[in-house]
Length: 238
Image (cartoon, rainbow, N blue to C red; front, side):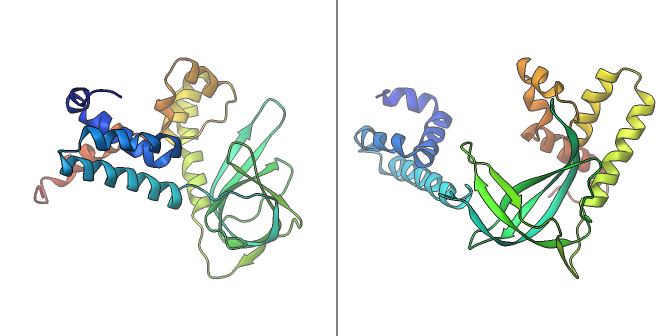
């Protein structure tokens, strides 16, 4: 086991490893070694155990449930995103949302693919949908509808249509001002957090720049700085 001096020099690494112990059960076997290392420092030992317990709790609450076999039934479907999808085989629209409730399961993310000629359900409502839910090897889910007709739930409000229209407006502005197709694809992906190009994400990942297309702590910091500059003249710093 790594010496105590190493952990004292790198405390963030110690706490990160403690969190991983809770999320990956095989690493939890190293916990007795920490007991022997920090036997005299009960506060540090309690902190390590608390962080490991937090990892276990997040594993139980945040990770999607496992489905041993396909489940068939009726679920409550909420749409949150519509985007164009283009692969090497086909192109169309991808409707992404959550099964808020399905066979005693909650908040299951699923995606429904529609070709351009197929009719997409209205984005302004939630729906009751009937079908079968599968779980893939990569822990993602696949939904197969037994009936194409969705039953809309009245008095529900969805913002997916507005979000799609706003993103299309941003893309149209960029398309008018950027003559290079490569520049347009890259800038629109940064501006809308979506890309319709099949090759672009592969090239970006090969360059090690995949974090540019994901929301990171830097993005939140920039937003906070931006709003702070606007609000500071009118509000107290606290």
